[in-house]
Length: 179
Image (cartoon, rainbow, N blue to C red; front, side):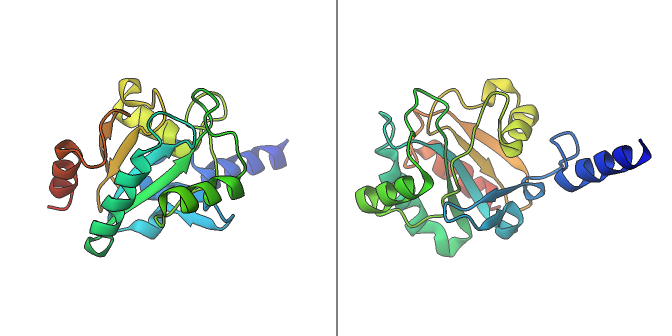
C-alpha cells in the first residue's frame, strides 16, 4: 500500500495536473512527428495556440495562421497548431495525413502537435488548465479556437473560432503581450 501511495504521489508530481500548473510551460505536447514538444521550448515568446481541423468551415484560417507565423516568427511570436477531432469529426486523419494535408494545401511550416482532445474526459492537460484559468466560457466551442500565451507562460486571452488570425483583435493582443 505504501508503494502504491508513493507511486501515485510521484505520478502526480511528474505529470502535474491543472491544479498544480502555474504557467503554460508546465505542459507538454508531442509534435506531429512524435517528438516531445514541451511548452517551455517557447519561453520568452508569445504563443498563439490553435485547435485545428482539416475539414471545417474555418480550415482556410490555416492561410492566416501561416501568414501570422511568417510575419512574426523572427519577432518571438509562435503559432502552434493543435489538431483535434472533437467537433463534428472534422479531423479524422492520422498525424501523417494531417501533416501532409497542412503542408500540401496550406504550406504550413509552423509547429503542429499530434492530434489531441481539447474537451471531454480525455482532454489534454493544457486545455483543461486553460479552461480552468480563463473559465469555461473561454474553452473551445469549435475548431480554430485560439489561446494566447505571453512570454512568461501566462495565459492572457482566448478568441473564438470566428476571430481570424488577421484580425485587429489578435494583432493588438499579440502586440500587448510583447510589451
